[in-house]
Amino acid sequence: MNKAQLVEAIADKLGGRQQAADAVDAVLDAIVRAVVAGDRVSVTGFGSFEKVDRPARYARNPQTGERVRVKKTSVPRFRAGQGFKDLVSGSKKLPKGGEVSVKKAPKGSLSGGKATTKAAAKKATAKKTTAKKATAAATAKKAAAKKTTTAKKTTAAAKKTTAKKAAPAKKTTAAAKKTVAKKAAPAKKATAAATAKKAAAKKTAPAKKATATKATTRKTTARKTTAKKTAAKK
Image (tube, rainbow, N blue to C red; front, side, top):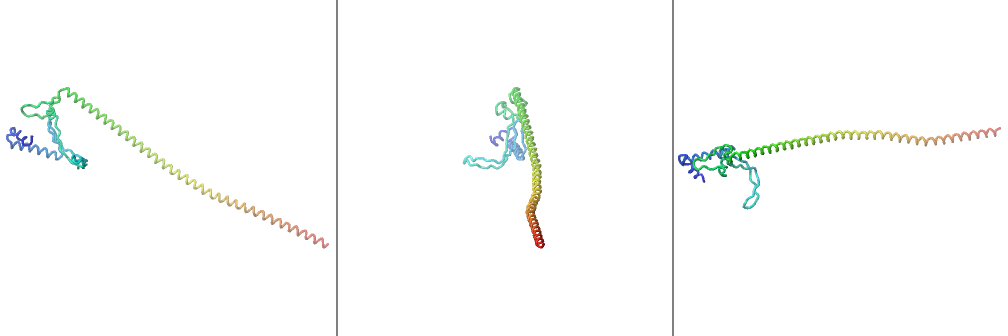
């Protein structure tokens, strides 16, 4: 069925073909304008029209197989309502005469009674339970991640503090070594000077002894010579 056939189908109910064409055009125009503006047009029992954004992606040309980049775009989408789905699937019978009601049907009237309703309730409960478990698991993961991050930060801070403490200790040790070296250097110099003085004193002492011995020998010789002279005169 195309638009012209649709107009012909409802022309008798709206009082003429022109009125039917205007009504169809007005409805379609209102739906298109709302969807373009980003609004969601929902007709209970029939379906909903909405705008969907598609991100940029890569696709393949079916003729050449070449990979083509598709830009980001927006497309319209229609989702059939439950009443429409039940009529198409056959779970609800289409009335032979009169208009098809697309109003929201009471619970259980479109899905086969109470048994189906209970099954749907069980499914909904299961979905809620699964969602709660997933939320709890996600919360636990986030808590564990926070604890791990905190522990890592604490460990890093402790390492930095230890490194800072070790650095002054190393500097102090180096400074102490330098001080000891400085103190040891004058001590070594003083020791070397004392050793040199002792060596000089040792060298001077034999020389003085030798000089004293020579002086004593001279005096003894002079005395002997004088005594000989005196004895000769007598």
